[in-house]
Every structure is written in structure tokens, then in C-alpha cells.
Image 1 (tube, rainbow, N blue to C red):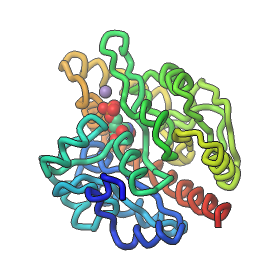
Image 2 (tube, rainbow, N blue to C red):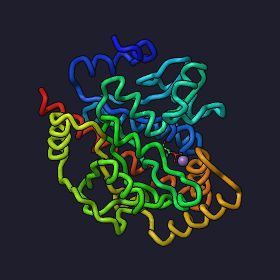
Image 3 (cartoon, rainbow, N blue to C red):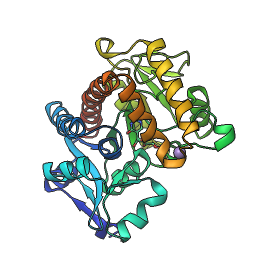
Image 4 (cartoon, rainbow, N blue to C red):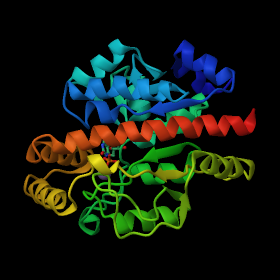
Length: 308
Ligand code: PSU
Ligand code: MN
């Protein structure tokens, strides 16, 4: 038995699926607590689980509660995370403290990857990852998500990265760290609210089966890292690039004026953007998460078809 197992509390349904080599998809909880307003956040959390189910996998939302790393939450847990003002944003550096103190914590991309790997989950669906922040030359603000992708064996499905980040440098960083970034039916990095950017990717797949084969081979080769899958927001839900980029630029300016730093930067910008777009960015955010859930569940299924 691994020493961390006593800290894991795995929901029965998830445990059974894992034991039977059936597809499981992890979901993060910072997107609920710090990424969206209430009550849309809890509606999203429930709906995304349903979409994972509808596409043939078992969902496992991850959070820290009562000194345990919970793998798979109840609707009541989701409600608590969505409503509470006391929930900590937990990245790698915060994980041990929040577990030890038995406080309530929501996991970011980095810590969700860590916890998913402990539980034996290989696929993880989210909206957007953290990255190299604009102005990093002054702040050195680089999300721990990038480092995690380079060392933890969990494959992450996202809609690219937001233009709140420095996208070219985010991709450079991932390249340096040896992280495979794959465009799902796209040759360029999607920029979250929009389907494209001017950053060309080196790998593109058309199907989940092709992607599953690539990940299976990575595992067989013993390469330890997450593959980052970039799935563009559906056309019908995407926002006009110049419209949203102006709003993002303005939000970043405000964050500098307000001296926002560290872990507060991303939640601050997300909130500002929702306000300034009068909820349009939130609608887009919901749509892309649902779209990622579909691809993630199908990918997990395709992967286990190779194995079984
Ligand atoms: N991007 C989003 N929504 C989010 C986040 C990022 O569009 O909710 C969250 C994720 O949990 C991600 C974290 O892992 O923010 C990154 O925070 P930071 O930049 O402080 O590493
Ligand atoms: Mn940061």
C-alpha cells in the first residue's frame, strides 16, 4: 500500500470503474470555486459530469475535504464548493497544508493532476490551463500547471489557454519541458474564447482513437508527462477575437493598478471579464467545458478499448 492511499477517499462508482479498467475522467474544482460565479458554477459542475456519463465514462470531480483527497463528489459536495467563501485554491504547494489542516480546498489543474494520478486516473477535462502570464519578465508568474504537465502522467483536455496569458511563451515553456501539445482537429493553438491563434502546433489528430493510440504509446514507452490536448471552442459559441481581446487587455491593466498578485491573478481576471462581457464570456466558458467533456470521455473510452 502506498503511503498516500489513506488520504484518498474514492467514491464507490469511481473505484469500481478503476478496478474494472473502465474509463474514468477527472474534473477539477477550482473552476467551480474560483473560476465561475454561483449558481452557474454548480450547474456547470453537474452538467459536465452528466456529459462525461453520456459519452461512456465515469466522472470524478476532485477536491480536498475533511483531511481527505476526495475523488468523486456528491451533489452536496459540489454545492458546498460552489457556495463557500472559505474554500482555498489549492495548487501543488498548498496540497499538504490543506489536507493536514482538514480545511476545504479546490484543486487547480496542477493539483488535480497529482490527485488523479494517485487514484490511477489517466484523463482530466477542464476549461483552460494556467500558463506564463503576460508581464512575466517583471513578476516571474508562471503557473505551476505547466511544470505539472511535464512530470505527472495525466492527460489534460482543454480549450487552449486564454489570452490573459502570454501564449507564445506558454507554448515555449511546454516545449522546453517536453510536454506534447496536440491539436484536436486544429493546426493552431485555440485561445479559449476563440478557435484560433497564430501559434502553430506540431501535432494534430482528427479522432479520439488516434489520440488514444498516441497516449498508449507514450505510456508503453515509459515517458512520464501529461499530453495536453487542445480542443477549440465550438464555432457557434466562440467570441469575436478583437472584442474579447480588448476586454482582456483592459482587465490586465486593472489588475496591475489594483496590485493583484500570485494566485489571485487568474480568478481576478476571470471575474472582471465576466463582468465586462455581461456574462458572454461565461456562456462561452460553459460551452467549451462541455465540448471538452465530450472529447475527454470519448478519448478515455478509446484508450481502454486498446487495453481491453
Ligand atoms: N483558467 C480558466 N478557469 C480557471 C482556471 C484557469 O479559464 O478556473 C484555474 C485552473 O484551476 C487553473 C488555475 O489550474 O486557474 C491556474 O491558476 P494559476 O494561474 O494561479 O496557476
Ligand atoms: Mn501564478
